[in-house]
Length: 306
Image (cartoon, rainbow, N blue to C red; front, side):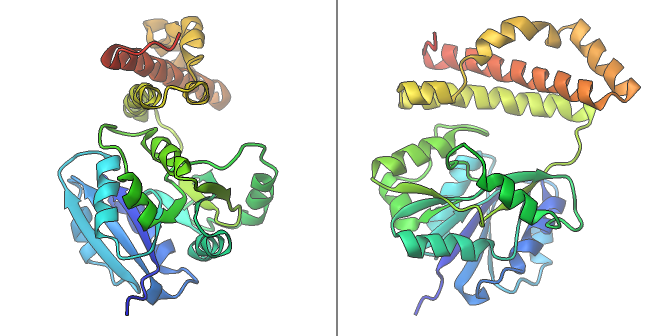
């Protein structure tokens, strides 16, 4: 008899150390260990992720899958295909889950039936005493005016519905919007999205360094390209507003951030230790990269946003 009720699917790429931390939190869940599994899908890592996984002594079933670099959408599809659980929980490899995380997802599926369950994702740069402020975080999230998110850093749905819609769309490359696109197709099946504040997770983000900016910009540009593909597949006003096309307008005001003048300002703020100004400049830099992605996407997919 298959007792496996939950499969937690985690795509990963060259995040060996932080993945180890994330797994420790999943190993210490209050949910019965024999009733859940963790499925790691390694998207072509070169940092020794497999060796790290093999060195662990997990209290629950732990599955390691490897694929050549194909992106998180296809990685998650591989995880779905190999999952034994009735409920699929999606998180990322830098997500820290509180002890009742699985319980809270399962509780909503039992209470509401055929639903998509979304939990809040909050940022942290702490590796110790991670959940010391969890009550305050939950309270703040309970007051949030925004509705449930479809981001796969904290999302669950029954496997049968994922198979019914064909899983994630493999046309999406890199990060961003493939989860929202899947969510839209699940909603068209008639599934309601429920937000459970108690199923909170912490997204580990170390403090930004100047050396991180090129990688972050490329990632944000890819999100912009995917945003246009999302709109092409679902050309509604709601989707169009959701992908923030106004970024193209604001980018006309801050385009200088990518020029020599902008680079000098960022270096000056870093030298002076002005964190507020530095964060604002980096935010503009990333917004510019996203706008670049929107323009590249419009050209690639022959779509107009304005």
